[in-house]
Length: 368
Image (cartoon, rainbow, N blue to C red; front, top):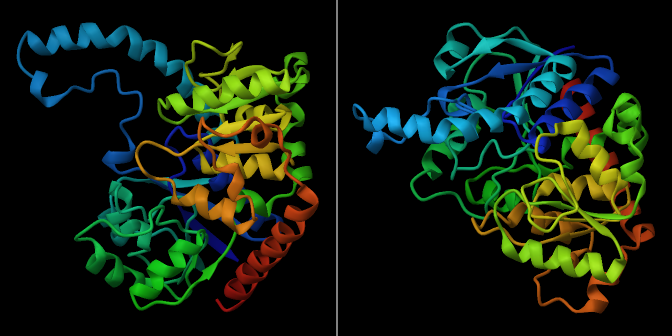
């Protein structure tokens, strides 16, 4: 079967890249011909732009001064771009580039089934949440969503009518969070909750992918360390990590700039992210996918709330597996910080949900 998926696959975020790959790889392993629609509208195409400018500085002389001030750090930051581009080139099977929903409508990629998802494609606080492309408003093949995420417990004010109308495009809907089921019901739709695509691949699948990963083979990942993955500057995460390192006698590795970490990995790509999670004694993050991969590899994990309020994804994930006590603040007790996750209780729930998700996909692909 010829399948085209659409998601935010190329936004220089490890979780976004890995979930896009995981759905593609899982479907290919079931014998399908799969491509990810290379959809890159303007708002998803400005990463690492050396010449981006704040409009208020876009004036003669002031503009040049602004660029001169920003350019050194921007050039330095572009080092992070390379490993993501390499991952995309090697692992993601893409269609031709589309830059607008109008292009997709005029010349849709050929498919037997279109799949929207996963990740935050329906997050209405972001541009993609009100982009008709992510609601499959193009083509005439069967249309389903897989593990699409609204990311928030409520839609942004004024977007409800748009979302309700665009969801009519779908023959079957599945979402990633249980809060998404509530949103669907409020809009008059039914759907099922399924696991994020990264869970469709087994630990062994991910290990095989790491077999030729340089970082995964390095001795530095053999020493005990706490991995910090902080997607925004968040001092509570720093406080938790420092306490954890002392209590567990571990070093601190960070995937963001940090003054307290023993090792920093800011210019590393998606597979390095997986390797770092796998090698960690414990993962401290405000990230859905850092938490998900910690669960895949059976690692202790703690989640600290984000400042921007986009916490529902992690809360739902933890609640689904009776791990609410892993959502913590710097005031957590020492006893809570040294407590290990009992994966003998988590894994049966996870395996059950994975099996349901695999069956859901099989049924709704067979109906095409």
